[in-house]
Length: 277
Image (cartoon, rainbow, N blue to C red; front, side):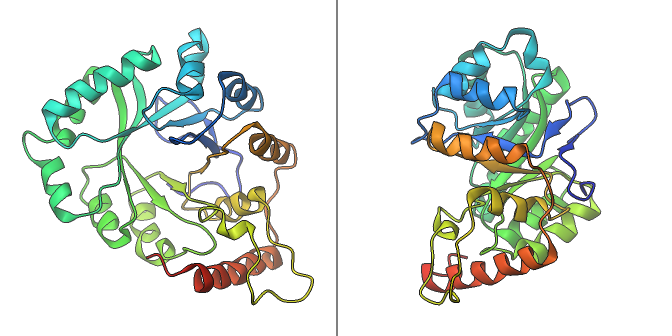
């Protein structure tokens, strides 16, 4: 799915609510409380990516009531078999207090063997496809670091959405993934926008007076890529969340010079932090 240049919102698929292109994600170490998530919702963030463990985000979703229809709730999905998927989906819906998920992403699929297992007649994708027909799941996606494999899986027609790493230090998806997803008009959710925080820190090769980017600078870089539908922010606490929310009041595209500055910083970070593929 090609986003309107630097649009603030996007519709991932017919029948889903229009969502802010900056999404909110939690992970195992997140210290966000339900009231923090509610503050994000009040600022217009309505794509919520849940890690699958009880936390402040899952508590906030349980309390949404009728407002649930205005959000896209995504969940990471670990099961590879239909039997495991049936148990996992029931658990996720029960913990969230909802009767459907907008997006389910098969979590960290990194090998061809995992993909074949998911596609098997008794695999998780077969089960999730049936759940789409029943309205318990709306979109089925996949999360991976393996760009070329992920691109081939996106091209297979078995997925509705792809979740891939993309940031100023890891731009390989521009060549390996985005041409495929854009041809299929497939929404892409970007993660690791900060490169695990390395993009926020200086490197030994920085030019004089260089100031490292902020987290919002890194999100702006990702959102300037039209192949990215949503980029995930995963603040660890309320302070980091407040920095992200403040930027929403000044939503504007980066200039060409700012993009180039971030690309060069990303190259330095990749050189010094290691070439994680």
